[in-house]
Length: 132
Image (cartoon, rainbow, N blue to C red):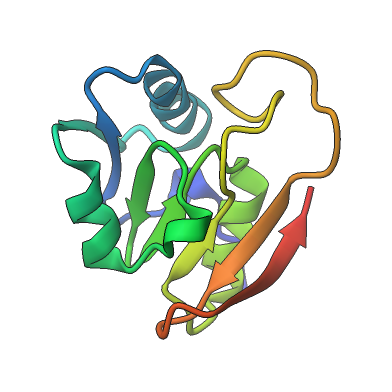
């Protein structure tokens, strides 16, 4: 089949962020400019409600949550990982990169090590999805 790039994804993409968070706005713009112009950036007072609704495990949470199709994409995840998700279509709830690693999209600084991204199952268990 044809490779699905983020820019070709026809569904809705929502980046949910806290109104006080600057790096999340940068990530949202990265997604919009490099990824998909349909991206909506939505400020929320209560980020916990979104994370609970989509089942993001507490130990994997970052500062913002992107919803693309039926998946959550938690944190400053590079587009390559999102494209792997869209192309492989695994039966999972979403992918997550906890914390705010230096050098990741939207974060300043140099990349200091591999970004480890986790696949989160519907029951909340998780395993490594990929490293970038």
